[in-house]
Length: 147
Image: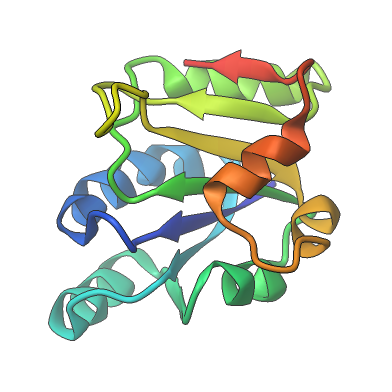
């Protein structure tokens, strides 16, 4: 099962929708825990924590350190997961797939699509100052692209 870390630094206003999408993954048994890293409006975080059971972490490094799963799914709060993302992730994991990039809908500031990463916790913990771009670099060229 996965530990999901949602990095809120760039779009805390989209956090409720993302946590809602992750609920299906928890029901399907793919997600063990969700950590919200990077803060946000305290009132919103308190409500979301109560409604979803998510834990809080000061930043991504603290979230990685607190995660209990061997595999991490690290997502930015701004990502809009594509339809079918859960099936693609489940299939990837059942087939013994390794590290992967989760590609979201829409475009970023420079035309890049928002993305998340599926990576081993040990690889993420080895980064001095983890962020999504550094974690993407850990994946290597052979990493799968999901949804």
